Amino acid sequence: MLELNGAEGGGQLLRTALTLSICTGTPFRMTGIRTGRPKPGLMRQHLTAVEAAAAISGAEVRGANPGSLQLEFVPGPVRAGDYRFPIGTAGSTTLVLQTVLPALLRANSPSTLHLEGGTHNPMAPSVDFLTRAFIPVLRKMGAHVELKLERYGFYPAGGGSLRVDIAPGTLVPITLADRGALKSVKAQALISAVPGTVADRELAVVAQRLGLGSEALEHRSIRPAVGPGNVLMITIESENVSEVITSFGARGVTSEAVAERACSAARAYIDQGVVVGEHLADQILLPMALAGGGSFRTSRPSEHFCSNVSLISRFVPIDITVNGHPIGSFIGNRIDSNTSGWTVELK
Image (cartoon, rainbow, N blue to C red):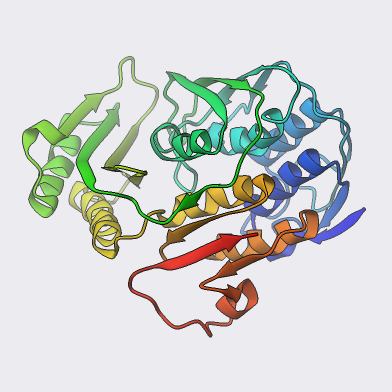
């Protein structure tokens, strides 16, 4: 049984361990779960990820309780099926999905997931990010995944719902070295139970900062309202990949500040010329490792990325380098800054 230190990262570390465990059949014990967070231990959305991973693999689990700092997880064979996982809060449905998706791609027959909770949460990929950026990359790797948003769920009200249909298939290595010509830049402002002027002001800033015409702007009011919520998304579509920049409205934050944050991130991505954005890099690292290889050019990898590399190496025999250097060299800041991006290679 692998012994893992959960204090080295947050909930993402646990979800990555669950994914790798059910994909490889490797049991693990994680201690000190989220001890560096303001509310340490397992929270509702983490427990749902544990329950989902256990359900599809018939796992034996110890320590799956609210606030628990330790978890033992012993997986069995992955089982296809029709599964429903209600988080019961505004916890992210997309993070639970990403926990079990790679394993269900390895099952021997199709599966369907019904997930209920938050669909657009700060600190988590939105459903739109998955459908426009993440899932298209998985399809390039050979995955067969269809995601349907049935009901929006904004933080903190939740109440969202999505359905995912998954057909089994083998992931294959791919190379994402060139994003190709820029095809379009579009902005979409979603509002629910907040004044429409919020979206109008956000889109006005985007139009001015990125030079977009009215045809590239969408103001969308969610009906019926599902609790207060505001999300601004900028989708940058290129020939070979798409990036989705997401900025969330919040009490005490002006519409202009929400839009400026999104525009700065969008401009940085466009100007740097990298293929894979920071958050997409975090999320495709694990599927590529399970595929046995691949490479991509990205912006400077995040702390989540680096901690995931260390964890992946405990489960999967694969070397992951950044600009040809071991990840430890990158963490130590001994790799020179590279304005044209960093090349991540798995082999």
